[in-house]
Length: 108
Image 1 (cartoon, rainbow, N blue to C red):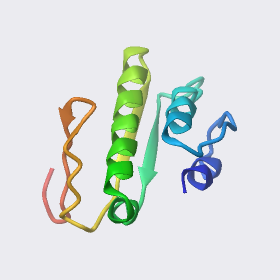
Image 2 (image 1 turned 135 degrees about the vertical axis):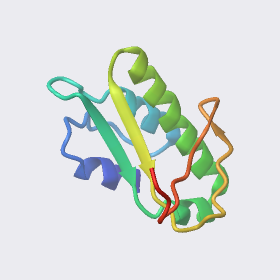
Image 3 (image 1 turned 30 degrees about the vertical axis):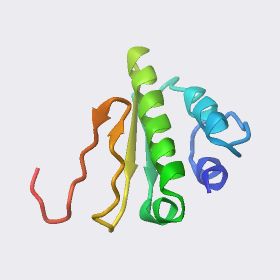
């Protein structure tokens, strides 16, 4: 899934394998921020991989949060948006912080 997702993103993708979560982490760390103010990674229907393997999905979200923080320390913005229609997706703390779900119809 991630290999397909990252190959479709119009960024200077490094081309590394994303066959496991360590490789995903390395790939996201190597995003080229030259000439941009930041990147957003959008994963639609995140409830599908979560329902298939909750542990893997939680770890993926935690890896993304960790890499986002590392980019922020370097002055780069890397944001992840995980879309789900399932209100029961429970990720716990990501990168040491509580995540926030925005429900449809809520204001802000």
